Structure formats: structure tokens, C-alpha cells
Length: 362
Ligand code: NDP
Image 1: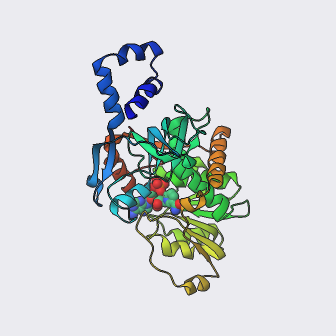
Image 2: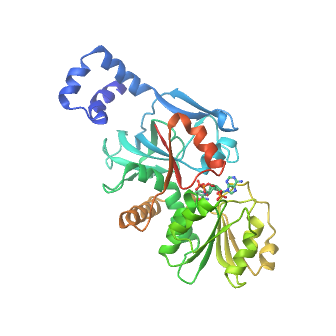
Image 3: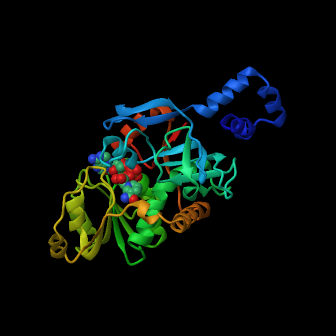
């Protein structure tokens, strides 16, 4: 069954003319290649938690689709901070796993119950382990078809961070022209997209980042003010820039090192959105700490709760693709690495050396 599938789809996946398949398939060498293609692939696996050295580049069986799943031949996998949390164990998972939560590529196999997807279609997804690999098995209801006008790499880079910026600005706190937002790590993958969306919806943006190079990138994306929080007290600067009022919302993905300053940068009844742990998780908070700062709101959201239904996933992904097409949203790919260099990519991300999005190319 498996080898018959491989034979039938070999030509499609490799773009060979039909004559080529007939000629090649008759040779022993091609038969062996088909078997290798079908049964083995390269992947970045985690067997134990730890530093980048626990990421192992291994040969593993190529996944087979279940009845309502598809297998995607990954052309680009997004590198995200969440991958580091699974590697270090901050976010627990039953090991071993294949790292990576975001990918885009071509459907290479479909399950027996699937009618909505065809082999050869371009798709993207997020929220499923296993994208640091040549192939990944994904439930069909998590896959989004990529519009013809969007490059596969762009789609891979837009899914997780794009939909995160989307829900943060559209659903968690609906930004508008009356609002001032403080965005930490504003030259990062999520940060640059948050800036562009906040400006699209008319808000004023105060960003923070660690270097003047990052500040220039954030300004180019539309930030009104950028504070170097490695040199300045961002909370004081935020008060100064808002005439002592404070901001309406803080989007804080840095966590531990910015936590208290972020709470102190809000105006009364402002919204604290703590959505990441780049510097470590935040400490526990007593509800009265919100009261004494002026009846603050606090939320700790996660993308996956905002795209859990197919409807939400499609709505957010379609709007992201539309905004990219319209030129309102720019995907900033800050680096591409071969799949085997996943550890180096994650080290650069964790070491604050990157701007925008990193991709792994299998
Ligand atoms: P980024 O590209 O933003 O990289 C992280 C940035 O955080 C760094 O570049 C750095 O910017 C800043 N930073 C500050 N302190 C540290 C530190 N001690 N160690 C490392 N980085 C630090 O990453 P992503 O865009 O992938 O993710 C950003 C954050 O958003 C992560 O915390 C991630 O977990 C979170 N996230 C949350 C989601 C959710 O739904 N809850 C979904 C997606 C992402 P600088 O040098 O300018 O300080």
C-alpha cells in the first residue's frame, strides 16, 4: 500500500514529466529511491530537555496520514520561541517529539476520508508538533491553503507570529485610534507584526528593544517611539511619552525582566497582556496588586485558544494573507537555516541576535 502510494505520487512531488517516471521507475535504483523516500526522512528530534545540543538531526520514518490527516512535504518551517520552551522543558511534552510548530509546503499524501485537499496543493499550518522535518502529518482541519499570490516561505513565516499579532490586536485588546500600546521586543518576529497591525488600526506605538539597529527596524515598521530598555528605564520613559498618563495596553512577551515595569506603565483600567517568557516566566501576582495600580486588567493568552475552532483559524489566516497581499503587512524574514542547523537558529533567537522571523529549510 505504502509503496504503491509512493509510486503514484512520485512524479507529482518531483515535477518529473510523465515519460520520466515510466523510464526511471523501471530501474532498480529508482525503486530503492522510492522506498527511501517513503519510509525515511530527516527530522530534528528531542529525546531529553536541555540546551540546543539536545536537538538531534535524525532519520525517522516518514509519517503516514490517518483518515482525516494529510502529510505535508515541508518547504519551510518557522522557528519560534515556543520551540525553545519545549526544548528546555518550560512547556512539558511527552518525549521524544519532533520540534517545531509551524510549517508550509506541499500536500504529499491525504487520508482516506479527505475530500477537501489534493496531493500537490500548497498549505500552511501552526499548532502541531513536528514541523522541523522533511514531512509532517497534520490534521486536515488545521491546514490552510496558501493563496497563489503568497510565497510558501512567506506563509510559513506568517502563520504563528502573524495570527498571534492578529488575535492580540483584534481580540485580546481591540486596538483603535484612541489607544497607545507599549510593545516589548518590538523588533522580534511577533513585535514587528504587532507594530504594523497597531499602526494599521490607528493606535500610537511605543516599542522597546535592546539595540539601536533593532530600534531602526522597529521605526521603519511604523513605531512612533522606541525605547532602548537595556539603557533606559522604560517605565519612566513611557510615563514621560504619555504626559504621565500611562499606556492603554502593554503587549509583553519578554516576561520576567519587564513584568513589574509593564504593570507600572499602564494607565488606570489599562490591560496587561503577558503573552511570553523570553526572559523567564513571570512571578505570581496578588489580585490586589492590580487594584492598587488603578483597577488593571490582566490576561495571559495563548494563540491556540484563539484558533481552536476551524472558523477562527480560517478568519485569522485569511485576514493575514489579505493584509500581506494588500501591502499592509510585511513579513520580515531575518534568517534562513538548513534543517540540520536548528540548534544554531534557536541559539540566535534565544541570544537576542535576531530581528523578524527565522526559517528552517529542509
Ligand atoms: P522574538 O523574535 O521576539 O525574540 C525574542 C526577543 O525577546 C529577543 O529578540 C529580545 O529582543 C527579547 N528578549 C528580552 N529579554 C530576553 C532574554 N532574556 N532572552 C531572550 N530574548 C529576550 O521571538 P518570537 O517572535 O518568536 O516570540 C516572542 C515572544 O512571544 C516569545 O516570548 C513567545 O513565547 C511569545 N509568543 C507567545 C504567543 C502566545 O500566543 N502566547 C504566540 C507567539 C509568541 P531585544 O533584544 O530587543 O530585547
